[in-house]
Every structure is written in structure tokens, then in C-alpha cells.
Amino acid sequence: MSNVHADNTDDTAPAPTGEAGVRRRQQERRSRVFVRFAIIEGVVLAAAVLAIFVLELIDPTIGIWVILVLAVLGSVILSGYLVTAARRDQRELEAARQS
Image (spheres, rainbow, N blue to C red):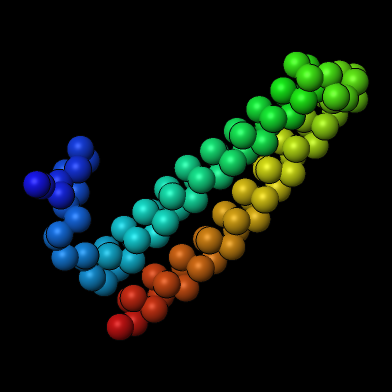
């Protein structure tokens, strides 16, 4: 059984070292976070739409604001993560260049 994926990456291949390895790990980490965030945000927004427009637990005129607040909150969380990740990535790259 092969560990080669559709994108021609191989789980058994040694990880690149140095700056290239750091960049690859950062990209993989960022991709995982984006996918997880999108799934969670999608579920939260879908649940809000379901509660507002299908189950009618909240008046739709107020429910629109609830959805808007959830979307803004999600964007603030993602923006905060991106700023933090950019700083961390820069520190990791500097450390890789020095070693």
C-alpha cells in the first residue's frame, strides 16, 4: 500500500529541513486550521439559519442580526489567528535561518 497522495506527497519521505521544511510545516498547519475553521463556522451559521428560519426560535428580523454578529465574530477570530500565526511563522523562519 502506497503512502503517496493525490498531490504527490509521500508520508514516508523524510521531511525537508531548514527554511523549506519550516515553510512546508507552516503551510500544512495553516491549511488544517483553515479547513477546521471553515467547518466549524459553517456548522454554526447553518445552525443559526436553521434555528431562525426553519424552527422559528428567533424572530427573523432579529435573527438576521444574530447571523451578522456570528459572521463578524468568526472574522475577528480568524483575523486574530492570522496575525498571531504570521508572527509565529516569522519567528520560526528566523530561527531556521540562524541554525
